[in-house]
Image (cartoon, rainbow, N blue to C red; front, top):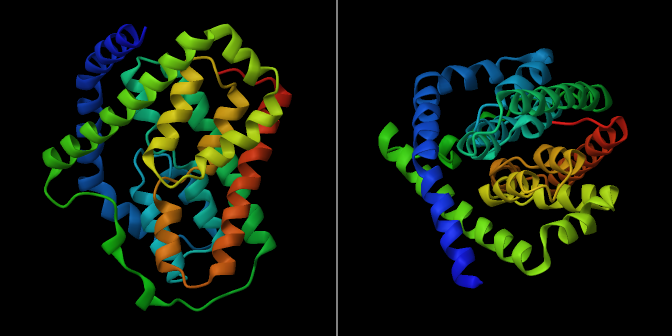
Amino acid sequence: MVIDVLYDTCIDGIRLLPFLFLTYLAMECMEHWTGEKMRKVIGRSGKAGPAIGSFLGIFPQCGFSAAAANLYAGRIITTGTLIAVFLSTSDEMLPVMLSENVGASMIAKILFLKVCFALAAGFLVDFAFRKKEEPQIEHFCERHHCHCEKGILASAVNHTWRIFLYILVVSFALNFVIALIGEEALAAVILDKPFLGLFVAALVGMIPNCASSVILTQLYLENVLGAGALMAGLLSGSGVGFLVLLGVNDDRKDNLRIFALLYGFGVAAGALVEVLGVVF
């Protein structure tokens, strides 16, 4: 059984490889050509920050979440703008779904809901925390940026092989568990307790690593997670953004508050998706 699962996992992974590379190559071109302009837009956003941040955050990878963390540490953007960027960031969800040939309508629905939730949460947070702080430019540091500096092609190759390995490991684990327990039995355990799954998925999403979004996306595509749990996990996840925030923001209580807000909004949004019966 192990050999069969390993064989199937490798075959599926190899089929995904060219799609992953082409996706990352396109994204790296976009990031290198427009990234700096977009980061300047975030920094000058002012009261409209949550609106701008929620739209820019949907761009794949965690570049904007890392940039937003630095901007927030320098108090150049508001808490609401940071929350909006973090919530809308999808990290590796989009490349994985594209490589799996997921329908454009499903991807569009997920991204649209993420933007809506991020937009609402960002303005809500800014309304609740209206304290004005002076910019602290000395804390603004781009050195934590998660992108490679060796060119578009090298960066695309680097992202491709890292996520390819993640997908292989996650897919093997999922396929092995499903083969051992049975797909219907495993899905029933989680899907019969949808609201418990929301809390677990949101917690998994908080892991500051690309693997969390890969795991959540793969679980959803395997029909193990429901739409609400997927939304909870993808919203709470911010790639390496929160990890960068911990390194550049000296206010630990503030970091804890942001962690709690991300988790709370992720669970609440996932619950709303479940209650409304949203289907991707």
